[in-house]
Image (cartoon, rainbow, N blue to C red; front, side, top):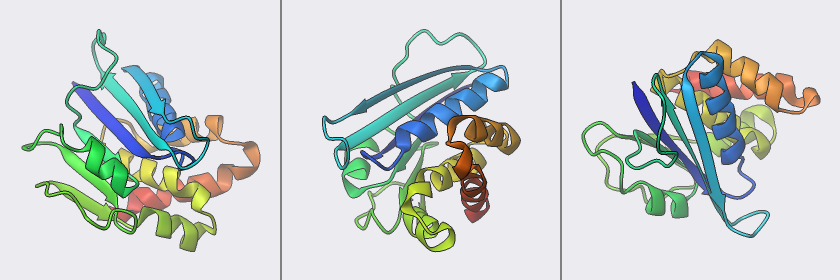
Length: 174
């Protein structure tokens, strides 16, 4: 098994943190994982992309070539990063309130990720963990319990409860 994931959005949305958590969960389950990231020079608002490759075998090339799943949290990210998805088996997940002009792709999941974080958890800050929950459920690569442990390890202690709620919210949204 080898899966390639690309999480994209803008700086400040937390896609890099979500990718790191996903990779850590995979390693905790005994899988091989590499995680890479790129982002613009802006602290907030610039382009942001994080990639994760997870495999049962050694990974020799650390860059995603043909992603199995792409998460797009902004219109710009959707336009830029979905095109090399496998048309037959790839999955595009978009934040339906921020990606208003969804790409023409056969396998697309639209979820109001940021709106859910804002309305159900009170802060946009948790949108990345909502998105992570969605990816955990749809990918089936790592267990929800393992991801919970990785989230608890990675987020500030005073936000663990809200992040667990965000993870469950995303997981149960699809």
